[in-house]
Image (tube, rainbow, N blue to C red; front, side, top):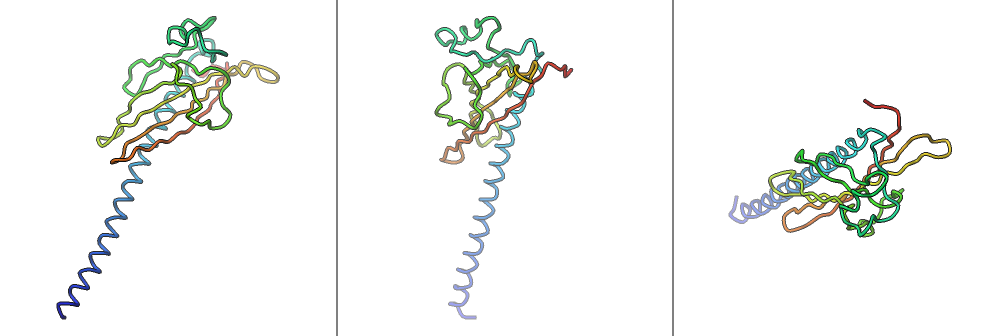
Length: 186
């Protein structure tokens, strides 16, 4: 072999190795993104399950208008039943969730259209050592009792999380819904 042939072979081998390395890095980034997405979805599902486990009679409904001047104290003082629930957060500490005002959305709303008042629950979630995610969550509980429906409430959770990956920040959002009836679950 001549020196030129060896140089061409080295260049071709370098291009192939760089292509494989790039594919491996992209695969790892996608896997990490999936793990983060599953972790946040699991956290939101945990909140939903905690809400479903509240006794039906103690489960509040979303207020029809913003309580008072819109402070957490006003949400707590909403009568006849407070529009606040206390659940455990990702660190197993008590978290106060103020219910969003009005009827729950029926399809995924634009996050920019959701309120920034106390009904927006915000927490930082450490998913891996490389990045923290910020979770924003809105919860609606609406009474569905009416024609052909007896003692039933819908629970809707809309959540958005942001994650920093390298120099970029990504935002994702999703929605979960469930129904809580008066039938005892315990």
